[in-house]
Image (cartoon, rainbow, N blue to C red; front, side):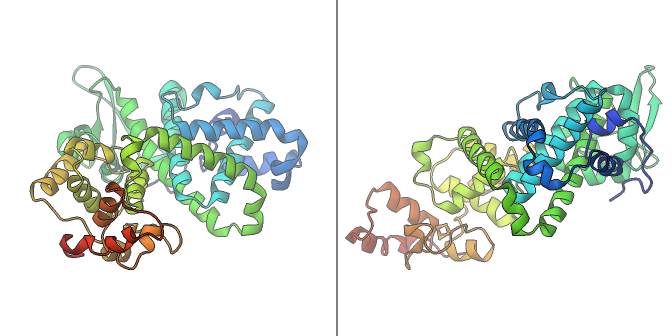
Length: 388
Ligand code: SF4
């Protein structure tokens, strides 16, 4: 990953508190905890730190809900010691709650929220732009174009690594001016050159936050994680409600969906990277149950690597060639069957070998536990196609 081997020094404590995930913030955070005699246990339940826990919860909710302002309006005044401490420790507490959940969906959502918030803040605070960009990019250059406008140029290696994760034609290398190993992030489509650059930096912040949290999760034992149970339960419940509200299809149809289909849509919706089999299955199954091509494409719009043109092309291929959706055995082999024994009565049946069989039984309303209808289910799948 071409990030700078030596990051620039930052002495402005307000800036470190505003972006608490900066690599330069680590030692400042340690000092802050030591100077104020605060342990992680204090952060979890000391009464005098209750305001910080409340602020941490607001920060987490902002990440989950992901409104346009990304919680920037909740940003504190970091010119005071108290403001800086609140900003730092609320970030730390919210990160610990996310790690203690061991939930990839919550992690993906929180990381997206924090990275978007940073992107938004960077565009509002241009005075710090150069320090932050030279922390996250291996180099950066500001050049004047023929019209006398200033434009940011970034090394080709950074662009190649980060741009595939961003959708839109602007981010394809063939559409960017390139010169001697540098790529121009000029303004366009209502975005300034600095706005484009902070969008690129957002991808690196997202990756860094994600890697940090995965490492913390690996080190966190169950006993420590259980101290956050209450906070984790509350935020997981809020996230479920939010995901439900955002699902781009009506609930009446959804109650017939097999868990493998539901979970694929839900994961993509939350920005989780679904594997190739999962994506092909989603498009093929959508076609088979009569969901429009347009609606199917929209299921991918929150995918981390979403590119509308590529998605439209690939979904169109699957619709035109009438791909048969994968069967249960193939989905299980490719880690796309989310159920375990006891999770779903229909999936537990020995004859359940295809998600289309699942939905047909549900749709015919013939499913009732212990009835002959289950028996009938066993003859449903003979024309379902091979499990491939
Ligand atoms: S058992 Fe089959 S239908 Fe049920 S979730 Fe798994 S893959 Fe889907």
